Amino acid sequence: MSAKKKFWLIFGIVFISLIVLLILRPEMADATTLVIELNSGDTHEINISDLRRLEGIDFQNLGEESEVVVNLLERFYERYRASRGDKLIKVFYFSQIIQFSGSDSFEFTDILFHSADGARILISPQEHRDFLILMALELENGEYSLRLIMPEDNFSQRWLKNVVRIKV
Image 1 (cartoon, rainbow, N blue to C red):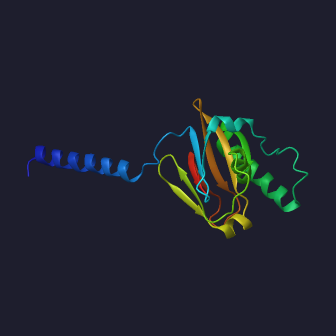
Image 2 (spheres, rainbow, N blue to C red):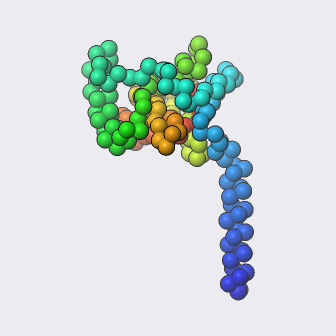
């Protein structure tokens, strides 16, 4: 096979692969909007930059939390600030995001988080009860993004960057 034919064959395979990827991963979309789908069928959309209005966790005054949670949050905050630097704007509990969406009540089944690049993380109801689930609002290059962080799970800090969809 000639070099020219090999080139066009490889080009065709890559081109078709990209088209298939875009079709199979439709959530690769707008990273400025967070879509929350509740198991009741309700869907809420939030502009991620609007989350700045939420009151974040006050890492300087954690007196309202249990000692175990305080120790965990302090360790998490030190590591996170060291790795993410000045990109961090605020950190919230996952439940705050759901409440901000306007949902009054909901039952947790599995929680599925989707990122803008198509990656996903599934959190079971048991994990939701047993582990701290945090959402970090970050600002990088003028764009706000949302990051899922589970600082105490068995997988040693599971996280997902650029969260754009949550199914509860």
